[in-house]
Image (cartoon, rainbow, N blue to C red; front, side, top):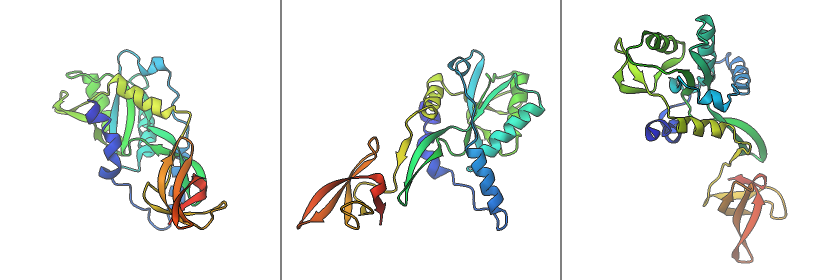
Length: 240
């Protein structure tokens, strides 16, 4: 189960393409809406709710890049159908990440599973009409392309959704709660970079080591005819 579900984290960036650019004239509105959505606070869930009896967590497929739209659409459907007693939480799994780009450091929300939304519902059972109705309600919500499903089917010929294990759910939500954001840099070991500030400004060297915990990078620069290691802050280095 872990390989089938959590493996999405490793492959989703390549296998699910991002949504294409907006049409001319629509871009500014679309971009503003996306920023509001991505910074919107998501559900704060207690450990008791996460592990509540009779509830399960499922991955719902969406078009990549439309995760927040789908989240809003599912929540609107829940309100419209008065299904709050059957669908409890709808989450776009994200984690905070510090992005270093062009000498600037900023905190961004990175989707852990592009193209997927996490939904907590009553446990969906085979042969249960209520489960079938709930499956169809979510499946027919705008932007939803299906559940992560098994080969067997619910009654009526619908693919049976696969519930995440409790360990998988806890791992995902633990990543979302991390107090220390991950650091993403635009270079890797072996690449050539330019030192942008400090006493070695404008020297070009190769990345020897990256320490994301300390926010430091060791660069080998040529000085006095030999390579010399220099430790720098991420902000002092830029990719050529």
